[in-house]
Length: 143
Ligand code: SF4
Image (cartoon, rainbow, N blue to C red; front, side):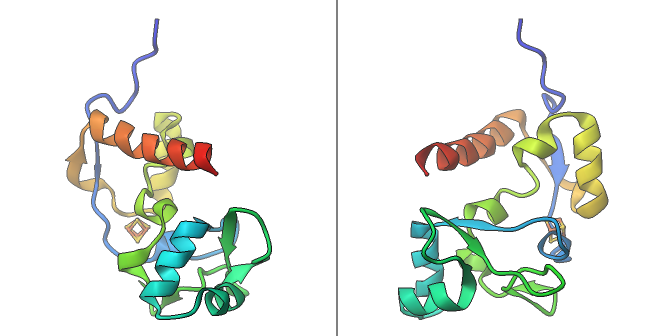
């Protein structure tokens, strides 16, 4: 028997654009080669130029890691705003509906300590949440 998901009645979330999820140490943002191309295009940079300026270990595999500042902030965070918001990668677009945050009500509560958008705004249905989780899983399976 499948265990009922704690979010079967949905979860509320609305981003307040506080920038908290883009700051501090302990995390990093991964982008695919395709996402890197999209961001480079958004910034009107040649791919190589983009890789040199914004990616750690650009010679790495298909999963590339965005650089962080000395304080751990995302390289694209400026004045608490994302400089590439319209072209931001899947990892950013799907926050806070990440598998690790949806493992249990406790993990969701922990995520809410970082993200003031949790527990407010519109209610995402369980189906919508599953769709977001599926997008993350597909990304992981492809790369
Ligand atoms: S921490 Fe939450 S509310 Fe703040 S910018 Fe990130 S997603 Fe939005």
